[in-house]
Length: 364
Image (cartoon, rainbow, N blue to C red; front, side, top):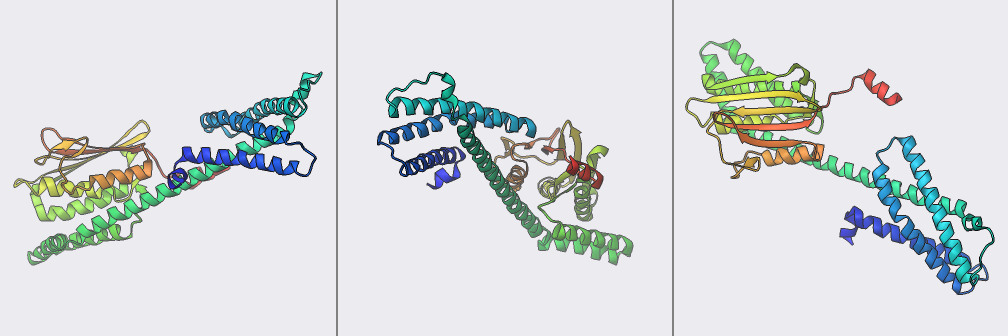
C-alpha cells in the first residue's frame, strides 16, 4: 500500500478506479428510491465501466497539454470533456435501451446524445479532480525537493564549519598573524585578522538555502584563499577569470567553498613547490559554467568522480545541485592539462529580479 501511495502511476489507477466505483454506488443508491428492476444494476455497472475506459485517454491527453497557455489549456479541457461526454452519453443510452428497455430504438438518433449535458458535468468534474490531484502532487514534490535541498545545504555548511573550526586551520592562521605582529607588520596582521573574521561571519550567518550572486561567493572564496596564502606564501598562486556578465548570476551559497578547499588540500599542500588554484566563470546560452582547477598531482577519475573515496565532498555537492535543479545541471571532475584536476559545474543562468521587474512580472 505504501508503494502505491508513493508511486504517481499507481496513485492514478487507484483514485481513478475508486472514483468510478463511487459513481456506480451513487447511481445504485439513487435507484433504490425508484422502482427499478435488477437489470438496472447491470446498466449502472456498464455505464461506470464505460466511463472508466473513456477517461483513460484524457489522462494522456492532459499530460501533453498541461504546459499550454492557460486559455488554450482551458479550451482544450472543455472540448475534450465535451467529446468524451457525448461518447459516454451514446453508450449509456444504448445500454439502457438495449438492456432495460429490451431493445428500444429511438426514431431520432439525436436522442442518443440527450444526456450529454449531464455527462459533460461529470467529465468536467473528473478533469478538475485530475488537475487538482496533479497540482497537489507537484506541490508536495516541490516541498520534498526544497526539504532535500535544505538538508543537503545544511550538511554542506556543517562540513565546511567543521573544517573552518579545525584547530590546525585556526592555529596556522592565528600563528601567521602572530608572526606578522612580531615582525612589526601590524597592518598586514590586522588585514588578515579582518579577513578571517569576515570569512567566518559569512560562513556562520549566510543562509545556505538561498541563492546568492556569484560575486558574493567569489568574495568568500577570495577571503579563504588569502588566508591560506599567508600559510603557503609564494607557494600558492591564485587566478580569476570571471566574465563580467556572470557576477550577478545566482548560485547556491557556499557552493565554491568545498571545491576551493579540495584544491588547497589535495593539490597545493601536497607539492613542495605549491600550486595554482584557478576559478573561471562563463555564461553559455542559458547556462552558467563554473570551473575550479588546480595543477596538483591529480587522481584517478571514474564517471566524473574520484575512483577512490578521497573525502572530496563532491558527491554531496552533486546531490545538493540535484535537489536544487533536478536534472538541469552537471558536475564533472576531469583531468587538467598539463596536470591537475578540474571541476566543472553547469547550472541554469539566473539573476535576481529587480523590484521593477518583479512588479511587472506580478502584473502579467
